Image 1 (spheres, helix red, strand yellow):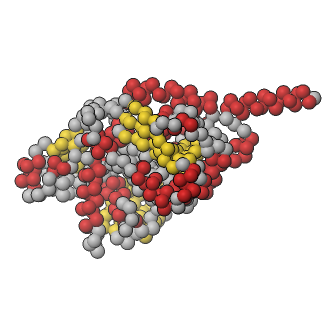
Image 2: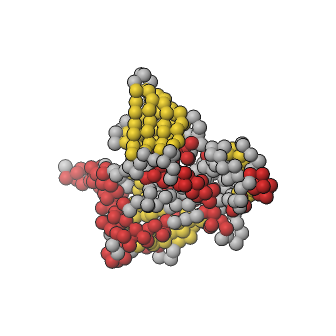
Image 3: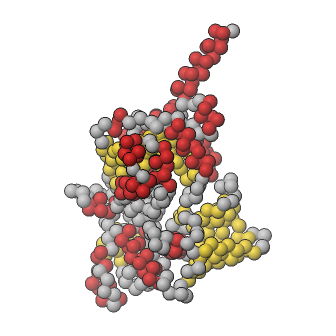
Length: 439
């Protein structure tokens, strides 16, 4: 009988070692990535990422000596960032924190759970996710976090809060930085035709040692983290001795969902895009996206003369420069007491399960006092929603389609008739909510 029990324990031990499972992990609600899935996938991804997307990994000397518990932080320019971090640190099995919306798909949810992904509600405190993150570190695991919480809209870092700094101080684990350059140009968030092969550079380095964390307070840690995660893909491209070419037949497609306002005539939501062209539907202004990802105006002098605008159109070479110009225009208009945006919209609601259900239609209005919605649901009942300016939770956006605002019980999704309004609403909310802070 003892021999049988010993054999059972030995089989269980070998199974746990091979699969990365244990009773402790099952009780905690989180598990380390299943080695039988995670490591083969990381191994198989390395060659195609290098050959097709031109990925180059640069590792700091000695980085391979760092084992768990460890926190991995990365900037978030594109969809493929977790894969880039994984191939940069192939000796670590990383539990990535992922937006809970990815777990809405049942098949994808199974894969993510096997890979050890931790679901987290975007832009809100999530006690369950925090507990699982701490548990991973207690199990000497590797915790992967993209503190921006969403992919970059314009090729630069998105705003982020100081929650991650407090986590680092509390856990006192080594922190590795994954700096990704070129991934936004490879697969911009607004792209309507997938990725465009070119060049991606991934740098892996020790950001904070346990000794440094012990010496720093949370504010100092925050400063180090923000500086490390800052990026600008367009500036990186300009600094290359030979700028990378990103191969795509339609590089401008859907760019108008971000760059919606015409610098020549000043009108909003009038820009259109097709193939390599970004152009105004109301005047003669036109820009061409080149193979390096930059915007080039076709006739700046003629456009400026026709519009009476003294702006230097040749300066609008980057998506983030164009967006910054739009936000500056918007910030000036927000000073007017009568400022208001109003759009017809369809609505969807989601409960705690995460599944969205089309719920009706109405009007969404945004002014200096806050965000309002008034409409009727599918049953004909009147529905209203209001969030005061400065108190609207951070939101996720599918530019050109919809704006999703998290609620305590789920989420509201607005789909305006004018898809370009999503960018305009998102930037206005950011300006209102972050007044006096990071925008």
